[in-house]
Length: 521
Image (tube, rainbow, N blue to C red; front, side, top):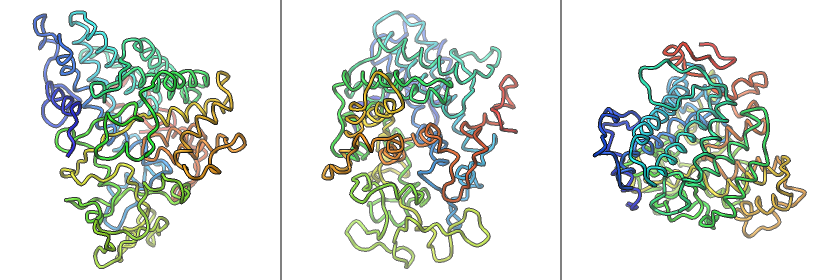
């Protein structure tokens, strides 16, 4: 079982200020807990104080992942007989029929604002600490993390409350227009860039660096037209170029899938920002349970039965050519045990059918059946390779949030969309770094000036970033969010669903907030 130095380091400081099962809310009065004599002074003490900010990030791969992924075209979570109905919440996500009372909508909001509140509370303590270089860098890191959390919430919910202090007794915040939140995020990142570390090492792994900030700025500007109504493609190229020319510690990995394996970490050359997980001490990466069939326990030498739920939509699976090495992330066809014997479950040969979504009579989402056939429908994604050293439902794979391939494809897309600080040759070179890795023996499938189009970039992003929390945002930017998919009909008249509703519980508790247009409680 892996145990990287920095992962252990983070796990130790994560417990310094939080107890119980949640580190997104602090159970002590942090301001009264520190005085001139006890304020953090050493780098290790600063790290210990800020631990809850990073611990909170782990639910990005649970609550926020569910919100962003379950309604996109890359996945479907159908009811399989008696499994995965869960009150109809996955059907609602697929059909785009969520409401302000929806569980997934509420959970993601609560996660994001708990994380933002944690940032504000930690910053309130740090700002009173004695001046030092460590203090300056630590504050910059926490403000950058807060900007990331705000970016995620702004992307999902649009018009949101904006708070920069931890104040339990003041007036409740009102709704801030999305464009103003955009401006705040950009300014926070730009103001703190110079104080962030440029180092790529175990010590900075899982913390925001200068390269993380530039990548996040590129991503924000890539979607500026959606967020503010005004595109700014040149800024995308500006920030991606900085990462590509100055972030010399980063490079594409020849084995793209290696950076997602259970032993991934700071040694990987491609990830720019990752969230560390550990099966015992930094739990929450449960993805292998969601995607694998029950019988895959025997394939991957697991000590528990997976849950057999999330699978690829047929049209998405069909995007992958057989000679695309990225197709190796999918399980389909005859399945086998760890020793190579054909896998059998309940007396039935386990053959995963990528196209086997047959609705039961009278059902709108149930593909189960007495013969268990519905439970074998849909290719299963093992990009995050199943971890035989998992503990319970928790795996050791760190979660990759941003990586160099995304920087390259963002640059190519921005140039194709009209950036004037780049040219077609640069776009072609950037896109082919990603495409070429996927087809190393098939140069005829690399992009040419004629084939590198926006549609090609859209498809390439699907092939490259499955389960990396990019697809919903990409679908919206490319005008595909209202398209039909599998069981969902086209909903062209519901463009308001490009953002999620503010949860009903939040509106009930704060009368100063305005519901997002189109939604009623």
